[in-house]
Length: 203
Ligand code: COA
Image (cartoon, rainbow, N blue to C red):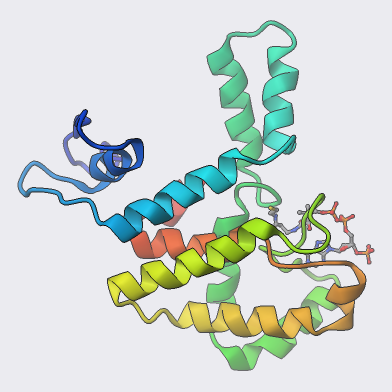
């Protein structure tokens, strides 16, 4: 990331926690002192934990399959990252954010939802292969999203679109019948963007 934005690499500081270091290495520059923001560090920590502690999903399976042939562990993890990239998996937060931008405002939600029901496209950030009664991670992520936006004093219109879209979908028979609920990616994109991560870095 630092290379792509033309900034010098920032070395880790041993006195900081893993996540504080991560934030510092992302956002510090040599010109100014960097004070980790506790709310943002806690949010990032939760994002890491919620994504790590997550059964045998597609990317984990990919790493294990690749590793089962005796490949080098770095190659196996690279294969897992490649699998995670797709919009049905780790790329869903970027896809959800793009979807919210495309919807733009709450007036456009009914037409968008009708398009989902007509199977023109999917509601990104909804649905899960395993969590059919609610994604417990989504509740934590939604709370974290509010905390981050409040801490940064951001009034993101996309959050209003997301909240209304969630409300409309959760009361619609199409989504009820198919047990489709918001997953972690529904709110993580808004959160990461507010924290300063460029969208193409999400996965
Ligand atoms: N929006 C609209 N309809 C959806 C949907 C979504 N996000 N996810 C599933 N469906 C529908 C399917 O079209 C299907 O409808 P049908 O019975 O009329 O054919 C039904 O729900 C079951 O779909 P299925 O493909 O069996 O669900 P799945 O459990 O295998 O899929 C996902 C899981 C995650 C791949 C899927 O929900 C999805 O693509 N979600 C959007 C991407 C996303 O947010 N991924 C992050 C996951 S953490």
